[in-house]
Amino acid sequence: MYIGGYQKDDAPCLHCCEFSDSAMRVLESYDVSNASYLCFSPDKKYLYAVIETDKFEGTKGGGVAAFAIEAGGKLRFINDAPTEGEHPCHLSVSGDGCSLYVANYSGGSTTFYNLLKNGGIGSKRVLLKHGVFGAPSMAVANRQQNPHAHFIQPLNIGGRETLWVCDLGLDMVLVLDEKGQEITRLSMPTGFGARHIAFHPGLPVAYVVGELSAEVIAVNYSTNAQGALVLNAGTPISVSPDAKVSCAAIRVIPASRYMLVSNRGGGADSLSVLELDENGAIAGLSDVYKTRGKCPRDFAFTPEGDGIVVAYQDSDFVELLKWDNSKALVPAQVELAVAKPTCVLFE
Image (cartoon, rainbow, N blue to C red; front, side):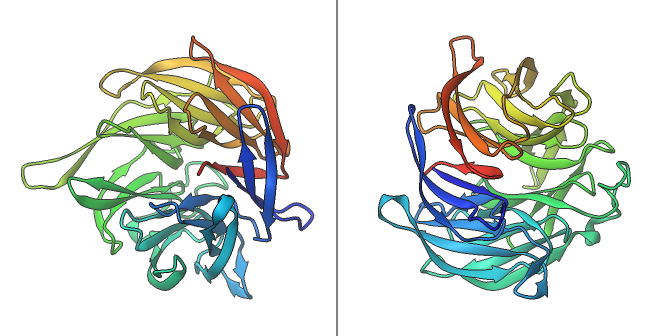
């Protein structure tokens, strides 16, 4: 298991950890600035981390780092590169393992790189500034005055790789090709603040979480007779009875009948459990589990799929939660102290 986070007192914030249902421990830590989000290459031979800063080696913007995964899961640094956009916050790798995609939050842009055969970061291919897609929403003061790219993830549709992008500042989901050209777009409700997307593992449905409105929207995708991608959005569903929360992570559980969303702030830190029907539609809010830790920024399913590890950014620990027979979350009494954790990734 790998944990990324923000630096605290200049301590390392990227960790390789040993995980079991009864214990977690840090095996090795790495000196990377604000490694707030992590991803694997498709073959899981390489790990990539954002460097969420506003300057990288003296120039404006953040960075991204590449690591080889060696015996025992420990990491070997390969190289790093500038994103040319401030505060990169999300990243992913193409299905063929040849491209790296990064979303720059404060920079309001996305950066595409070629990847080298050794897993390292190669040449920058695209720097796409999101102002080209339109004016910011301006609906939520101090959050939507500019574009804010928050998520970028490839999805293969009918043999074609598409890139799905959330822009919190534009209230928009964009679908791009590998060159950064727009395929289609979907405007979200004003003040929604599109943050992340979870894709149903078996159905053509994407679930978009709104950080600012604390809602989720199911989006069905298909191709028409001309081969064009068509998106149809459902009705926004509230994920919490507390209006003060802002959402963070969203995942569909491996069994595909429930979805989890993490909620932060306002003294209402929690995990929402939403039920899905057989068609992938959101049937409703099933449960809201109040967390012990503050700011559940991210979570990941255990390899067996019967639990999750939650990262509490403001409480400096991660915790294992298990499912019981009623699909409720139950503490497993297993936790690990880690400063400002923001991302959990299982090998």
